[in-house]
Image 1 (tube, rainbow, N blue to C red):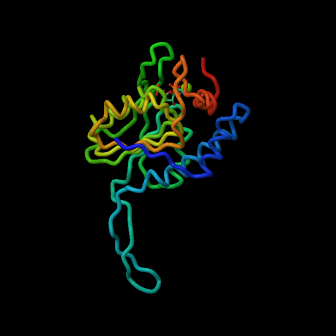
Image 2: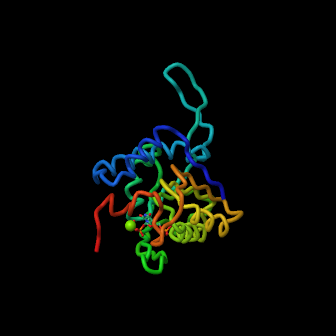
Image 3: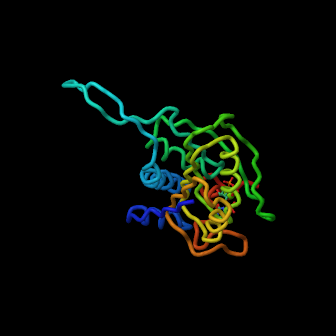
Length: 211
Ligand SMILES: O=P(O)(O)OC[C@H]1O[C@H](OP(=O)(O)OP(=O)(O)O)[C@H](O)[C@@H]1O
Ligand SMILES: O=c1cc[nH]c(=O)[nH]1
Ligand SMILES: [Mg+2]
């Protein structure tokens, strides 16, 4: 498993505004999209391409095309949905599948409550979107699920990770073709397994508190 922290002043600036508890939901949504586009630029460096032949108005030449089937993008609901627009802006031809997952805040177990993905992902390149990697339980289950369907390589785009969650994934996914692309590795988890300093509950800040 590889971990890449995108070191760019615009990423750092936007993340700082995102963390601020006084940032409103509409601004939070906009910043999330902008951040994802910047992270996706780095995360797609190994996107599969092939040489294609085209005709310009002047001559025939060779260029670069995305290999078909194009990558599968999987936002993890709810919070990952806030990252989808930022990703598809960069890769508009990507296919999109959905995983609905929620962490039980008492047991910290990740529950899958919805799934809409192709049955067969054999050989596919997959990009998973989830802003928060806290204990790592949610991403671990999502990644296992996608590999079980046949995915060949998985890149997760997150905004923040806790060192504890990264260590868990590193241990459990050792040797698997997984890349985690992040805006920041934060300090730690608190007693409720929230990321510190973090940004709070990403789903609630994007979409409001659900009971
Ligand atoms: O690494 P973990 O400890 O598993 O925690 C991270 C998960 O928690 C959040 O989702 P949440 O369960 O709050 O669902 P939501 O997006 O609907 O708010 C977040 O978006 C991740 O999916
Ligand atoms: O800090 C955290 C941890 C889990 N989920 C969140 O949305 N935020
Ligand atoms: Mg939440």
